[in-house]
Image (cartoon, rainbow, N blue to C red; front, side, top):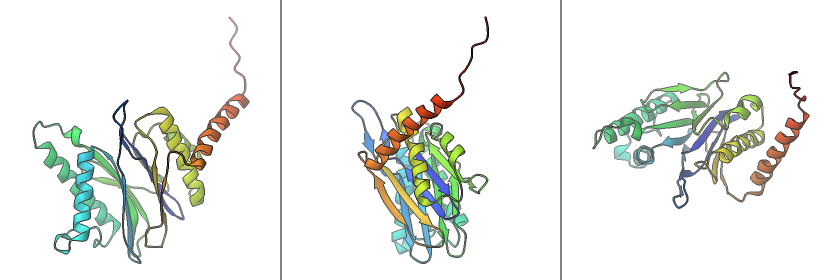
Length: 246
């Protein structure tokens, strides 16, 4: 399983993804699920994947090939004039890859499904964030729907709903996402550190701060333990429940 979140702020975009693809007593694998491309001064594009690993790796490999080989650049996300066209390209590619895999052997389309969070900015266009479905269609984030989650989404959603603020700083956004990821990691062994992070500042038109949070990161550990203590303290301060009379 996996967990990825793309968050839209007035300052820009924040992306975070875990790196676990399998879990079990003797079967733990780590793969990168966040990928970035840039043409400094022109565009920055970030993509995060969840779903069948063969499918997502095929999509990324094709995008990488088209962005590096001039003869294979049509269509290329590094030449598309808008983020909408990039989303359309990625959606069509995802649909084609799923269709190709499903036609081999048993027809079990769901086994090859994948979803993608795509975000970035091109030229004079505003920063955009998209959720791309296995069918190739997509929806765009807005400040009414300011973030997208893929993978194991249910455990980390409550804190996003309650604490998100479009005016928050990048630092607070990362802290918010760490709480969301910690809640998911505590509840589901199929999601785990390291966590990959990309902070894109609106208007910069280049990749921003890209870094990885390791399993033994002291700040993550302080957030994890501090959030648990804060929840217990908040629970203790709630009004006492009184049983109805027998």
